[in-house]
Length: 89
Image (cartoon, rainbow, N blue to C red; front, side, top):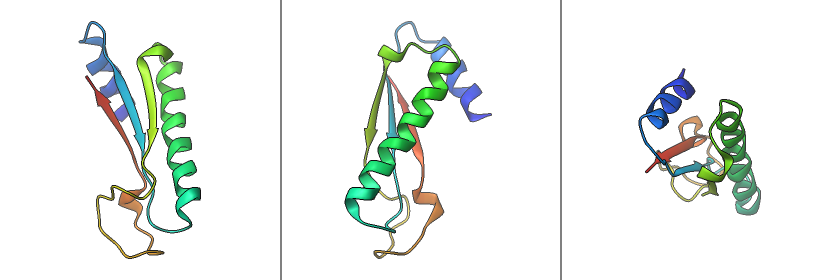
């Protein structure tokens, strides 16, 4: 459902630049979370490519646990911090 809204928004822009940013919560080591956040973003990128978005328009970034929606101490699980943002410019 969200992917449909993203594709709709992209269709309204002549040459969109898309940045897919993965995030994690603070459970686990920082290097692991950095890798996990990139994998999350890559998964969303792959879905965008499947629906016809040109791969060269999509950039992937991982922020790990550095930009939480909800501040928590280390090792506290917070599902809202496990997310992917899609920025369209």
